[in-house]
Image (cartoon, rainbow, N blue to C red):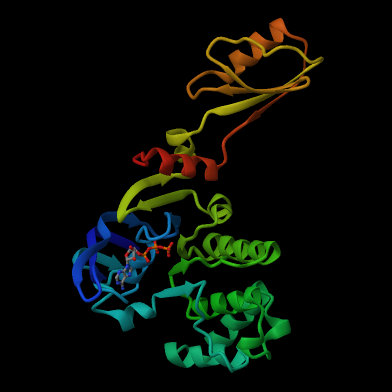
Length: 318
Ligand SMILES: Nc1ncnc2c1ncn2[C@@H]1O[C@H](COP(=O)(O)OP(=O)(O)OP(=O)(O)O)[C@@H](O)[C@H]1O
């Protein structure tokens, strides 16, 4: 569905160096990225601010032309076939709306039918389906500018999917949403992917989105692809050490187990850092043989911890 080969995008910017002096510098926003997304995949695309995510999305949707390299989306070259491509993809930018600000949501969605020249009967059926799935009914008559952010986002999702594109590209779709709206949007995207087989590329800073929705993640850092693979494997690649939280029957000095560091002691509770590669079950067995243990919990690092650590250590290559 998406095939990207060694794409680069550079921008020339003028930087002030003195009161009147300026010099031209070249910013490499995307610096040699290749990847393939197959039909039906749900892929997360993440990276820190300024990493090159939006620039990539703009090249995929034909808004920007790559400085070099090739892009094929749904079999087309996006920058040359922008109109043809528009029929095959849906795009949602969380920070901007594609809806008409002063029109009621229903009218905006009707105008989109004309833009994509969708048959009225097909449009009616599809609209009814999206209205139900996204629960748009209560505010179809409300002008877009009066919608809450969550309602507007649901409207934008409907607008992007009305022409039933096989590919949906989302740039920060849950930004600024409250917990309930986030859950609605995530649940909806999950269904669209599972039931209609829509391929989804999701850019987000919200790791909750990624954990809930994507099996595969790509991480971009300073214009380069730093990781492309399984979300679960990412934990392994980078996994922070695991923490074993042990409740002894009574307070005591830090326990001693070879290879394990006691990080914290609070009354009868002790936090043990178990290095990666060490068998946690063996640690538990060694402990239980020597100390009266009331309870034990093993805490796996969450994905946020993993990614923060990857950035900090500057080693994000899988
Ligand atoms: N039109 C432009 N002109 C000059 N520089 C640009 C332009 N667009 C992007 N850049 C630069 O390219 C780099 C990548 O920007 P991009 O917007 O793709 O990052 P991003 O990963 O989407 O960041 P964010 O998470 O903050 O949205 C940044 O250094 C940015 O300043």
